[in-house]
Length: 66
Image (cartoon, rainbow, N blue to C red; front, side, top):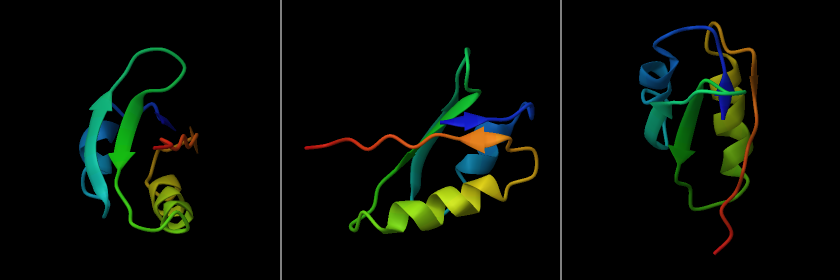
C-alpha cells in the first residue's frame, strides 16, 4: 500500500518490476500495488524501489500467506 499525493501514482507503480497490478484507493493509502515474487527476500528490494518514486510518502507491505 502506498501513500502519495500524486494523482497518477497507481500508473507509476505498474512500471516497477514484479508489479502485477496496481490501482488507486481511498482512505489512509492512495494506491495498492500487487506484486508477485518467487522469493520472499525480493519484496524488500521492490518496496525500496517503490519508496524511491517521486512523491511516495510511505509504504506498508502485506504478505499473502498460502
